[in-house]
Length: 238
Image 1 (tube, rainbow, N blue to C red):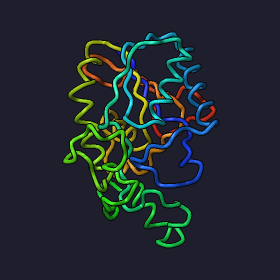
Image 2: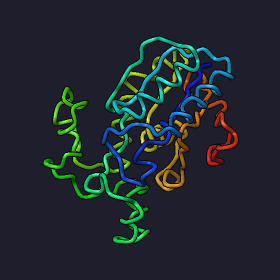
Image 3: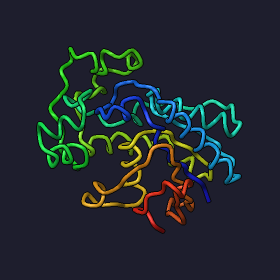
């Protein structure tokens, strides 16, 4: 038996401003920091020792993980992987979601946010929000840096990384925590829960609420639950 904790970062500055964030490197709000600390408290209450920690390259996920680790009193190293980054929203990056709903229509924005294989228009490489212009991505080969992504694209990189770097650790009964993002956590849930393309748009991932998944050696799910029951979503019931 192994335990996997999936945590979407706490509220970010651009979550609060209702902006499409994607690969832009924004930090947590004070509320987001509180969410991360609360995530640490509910994880601590399980009395499960976590062996390995992973986060995306992005500050909001990294700082969420640091606050969780501080709360559970764990000072071990953790692994950062760009493959666990949020979905790249292309030309929508930095734009306000409510304003874009008025401009393009609520249905179109919902399709951009939740459809399986629809990509927004690419983000211009001269845009300061393009990842090639953000310092934290300087060590990533340009061929791996997207201009835009669908959820399908995000799924491909996230699940490939999971299979190559994380799955064997779970099969060896290691307990793992991943701090990532709404769409990268959604991608992992699609894989682990064997969701189809019609189910995945309905899956909501709350900020700062750990999803605790118990797995057997073949990675079949035995149990799962959101640890903060007051903010739990009912879409994953086992």
